[in-house]
Image (cartoon, rainbow, N blue to C red; front, side, top):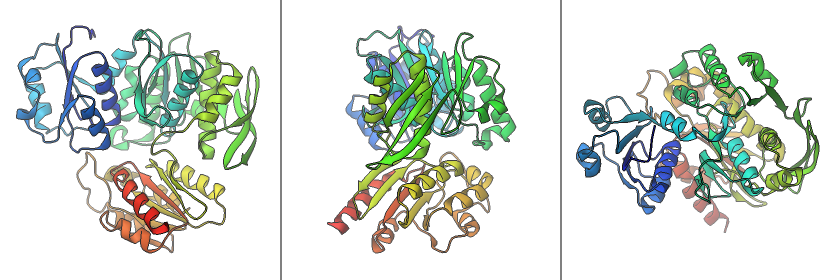
Length: 464
């Protein structure tokens, strides 16, 4: 699709991390950008500060008048996210009036055309891994664009544009499996971190999801390469060029001599081209060491030298809400994480336990989606049992209606943990501060992020 004639871009669901990236991209091209979202957030506020008009009521009368007056596909593009309910009045207005209407994934696919594309997919780890790839390339002088699934703490944004204005360069994108969105991409290099079942409301069962990952791998250019784990390859059976990575076992790329030093993981990365010695990763979590190995594989394929890789991994500050330290003192540690799948919760809690042996871990979890809670209830229970104390919030529904019998109370009953309780969002700060934790961990993909700053401020006040 040609973007040069477009004047007006309207996004239904503009506040999502992927949608906001598109909004900022088109704004950088000089387009008039506006949109709707259900709830104000820090991200929507930032966009409004950047000159993007946003409203928060589903009301056709609030749509930018230029969009209402221009229905031609030549000058107006409407972008929507599949998370928008089908009964949404604005979305139906655009459908009924035959606007130039496309899903977010389609538009991202068009943007990547003509670029050397690195796409990072997987049930877990794709946001941190894609941000790692971007940071290695950027900090080593390799200009690239990036559409990320989180806010980089190094760059304070979820989208990076070419400084020179020349777009015909490398592009790093997070490849989203939800609604099979990643099947609009044709990458030159692709990473698949994992294919654990998720989004069964879309895929129905794990075999359908695994088939979609196999189709994604088949979209890699013939001369390109898939970077993945042997466990993933055993499922998707990709026939093109493939290189493997692992945490600490034999593979094309793997880590050895893993230790902790001054609160950081240190290790050597073994590659087909030799060893990168004495890496000191800038973020914590053993799962992030694994993510860094996948990112290193991309960097080596793109001819980044070992010194620049080592330096970039050491200066990487991570992604907001990915093992994100909010308080880090000898008496209190508060980490916020996006974990919302049983395997992510297991990885997060396991890393915290390994880093703080003997410390009491208080976990706060907000389940995300009724269907996910239903489909993985036992998995959630086993993972959450790794905590010493659990505070469980109500399920965040997002796009879903309630399902009978699927509640946080149901989930709590399955968790074999002595210290556990349900809590409302309104009660949370008082509950936490009344019994000061040693290690506090907030997890979830809903609106739990809005409780992080109030919790942090209350805890700091209590410890002052």
